[in-house]
View (spheres, rainbow, N blue to C red):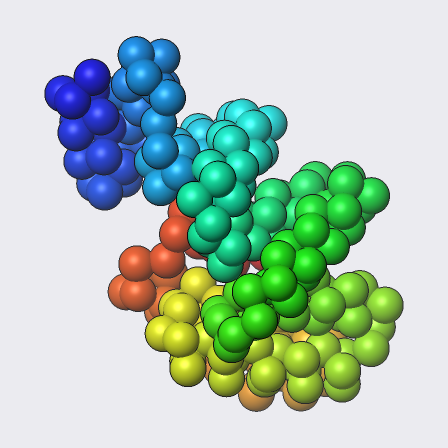
Amino acid sequence: MVDQLAIGRSAAAARMWSEAYSRLVSADQLAPLGADDLETLAFTSYMIGREGEMVEFLERAHHAHLDTGSLPAASRAAIWIGINLALRGEMGPSSGWFGRARRLVERHGEPCAEQGYLLVPVLLGQAMSGDHESAIATASEAIDIGEQFEEPDLVALAVHEQGRALVRMGRVDEGLKLLDEAMVAVTSDGLTPLVTGIITAA
């Protein structure tokens, strides 16, 4: 168990996704993984095209965080589930997970990075409806929260969506500068695989 888990963690850190997946799954079969390792396995699953399993592992991580009373961490797992489902067009279940995440943040009752992550579906919805001015403003708010809590994933996502909104409004030069900034974050800021995939695929 220890060897499989250690090797799986190392492989994930080295972005050896197939190796990390097989090792972490083997470790999980021997003894259920903890919340953090389940999240690693979830993102590893995403990177090898097993998106359904990603949601499954994130759900387990979500409940594991709840069991330990870690409300912000449980909220974040719910947010990632919601984002993944939204990207797959499953808007009903996605909305449900975002709602759960929002309630957990409210129960937590203190400023946290998850408040910024909850703005991501808001700005995506604004962009999809063509309300680009609102999307730019919401992205700015998310960037501020991301910088406050030192969350490169959140900052990169918000910068990327802000850049896309500017391009759609015809402010191409401004927008492209932000898109370039987001791509720099992909290569230098150690973003999680899901965020890297979202930014590079757009």
